[in-house]
Image 1: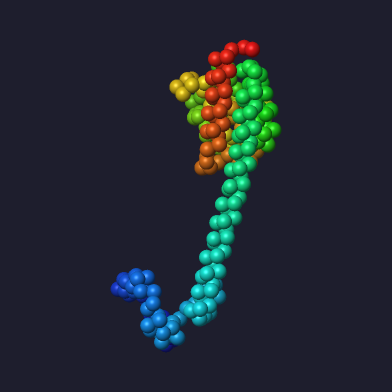
Image 2 (image 1 turned 120 degrees about the vertical axis):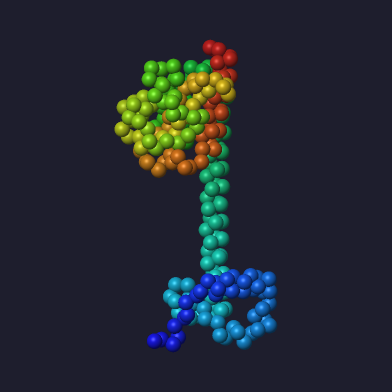
Length: 224
């Protein structure tokens, strides 16, 4: 039998370890007062398993912590840049809506404008009073991402491009908070992961509010 084999840790040992770990947190100068223990510590390397010094293990831990912080910083910078880019695009959409002289003009130009501003693959605008709209109205919210559309829903929204759509975002345009849907804006992609139901819909909701407000305003103004 190997005399150097580490004994199994019992439940009592685990409780003692927790208490000792808590004690060390509360007394960080413990090893300054018991320096002889440092030479008896067994510290395995995190990947190779070989025994290393406490100082070397601290260096490795600090290096891992630094790498994690650098990754978090890169993620924050990337998200900030993406939010800034989307913010500028939303501003461009708002300027387009404000410049529209009539509801008919805005609705006619909207799909093309959205494709250009946001670099989108498929954009369709369908009025809620068109035949077949009930197949979409049953699943529509103000703004949501969908990966599983029924064949008739894809067909009504995207027409000849229906077979190309693997995921989509659906925005319901309402000219008032409690108003019935006026139109459905469908944004599609051939990528299944492009519009993930688990992803955020902050900008989609912003778009929904902008479009709904614009429709309501242009309806009130009437034909130019």
